[in-house]
Image (cartoon, rainbow, N blue to C red; front, side, top):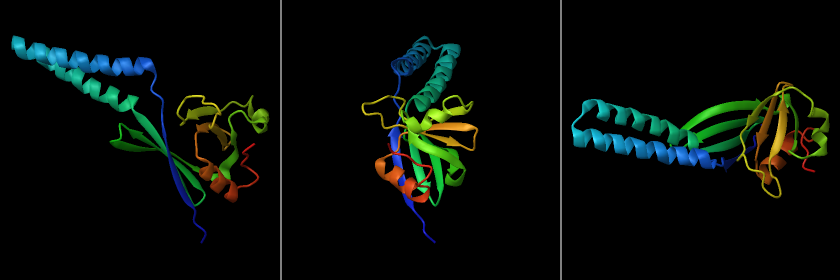
Length: 166
């Protein structure tokens, strides 16, 4: 059996407002907890702990990496939150994939007006040159990823008529 394996990681860009929110919530949690301790007020201390719990979730959801894994005709996408928690987001079969091409490719012109649910698992930044790829899956989903050249070559070896590198 011919098994192929490759993985790549992509750090999602954190917008400035999310970074500001992360620091603001941590600051508010620290101030209210210290205020509750200084004033010996249980209610203020409880509010500070609740804000701290909220800060934990804000931090976990602002520092995100995506890992693409190709193994034996399947592409799986994992979301890694704050380098501590891993969650399997989706698994895509290469056989159900319609096309894989660079995001600005002319090969995608026939798919521009298609109604599809969009999933963005890329860094979210348009670099120069843009290394993001789009693939349409099962006629229902449009997935944006940012794979390495080796990842694209490996998928192209399995499905040469579906993968374009322009």
